[in-house]
Length: 354
Ligand code: NAD
Ligand code: TYD
Image (cartoon, protein in one colour):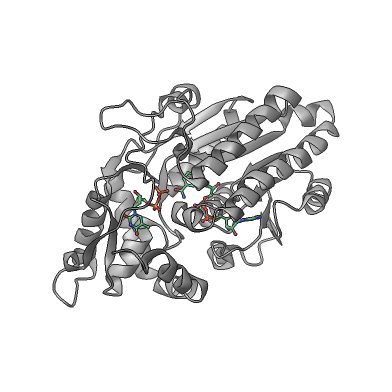
């Protein structure tokens, strides 16, 4: 038995692979293109571990996926691979359509062919788990109830539209072909190995470097934040007991404004690595808002709790402390992933914001 994981060198995927192999001897075949967001260093703890088979490749490459399925005969596919950053999708949506939509389509077709070739017992056990986001549901007003699994899809960014499209494909492959799929729609993750283009690692990294902390608009946008290992445990639980065709919303019951997130991180930094130039708060800089910026996301995670008994183990106060400590202890990782292409991205995204 084995799992095929896509995007397992990225932020959540690498945490999932590390977590999986810490708890199970079932091998993982890890297919990742190693874009700017994929980093083999995230998986360094698995060097020489025969349970981890890494393959550099593209989820749009049908013959490669056919080959991996035929060779390793995984009992499940866990599909993380995606372009994942909203701001990049605004500057260049093309790659999002290719990887997130065409890539999911290619993987679904390969999975369907593979699943059709399995014997009855294997076919009954097989799962295709699609990792998606709460952003497909659009934006909430302050008093709206959180998103449930039946909230209408109203994606607003090229990123969320591409993820919504991929969710629809997965749903259709269940409805039409009976492929045993599950989908999870999760809120914002944070934790180790988070690429410093996203808010939490960007703020930690910039503060330590004495650089401005860019706050889009008024900073009062709301997100629900979940510690990454809780997302991993939710996916493990869905693989274990989730029902084919079901969607599970996954969240941390932790809504916070962006400015609250930033000030919480700065307080922790003041405690753990005080600002040599006075106070990190001096670096907070309000900049032009993100076009089409979603105001609020919130997740109603009662279904996964009721049906699968999953709840997050971490609360924000403990998760964010671990995260800041991890970044302080892993400055070399930050230095390596933020060389090269990352600098061009900073100029592209922040250069023109006033
Ligand atoms: P990430 O950007 O950190 O990692 C994505 C990984 O996919 C990278 O390793 C990259 O190399 C790989 N990849 C990209 N294009 C590929 C391709 N064509 N073929 C093969 N591999 C490719 O993303 P993440 O934050 O770890 O997100 C993983 C998944 O979880 C995504 O599907 C995302 O939509 C979803 N998600 C993310 C969050 C979040 O807060 N980060 C929340 C909910 C859902
Ligand atoms: P991000 O981490 O990009 O996740 P998402 O857009 O998928 O929720 O951003 C989280 C929030 O932080 C979002 O409201 C945008 C905001 N933000 C800033 O204010 N400044 C920044 O430099 C970045 C990257 C994000």
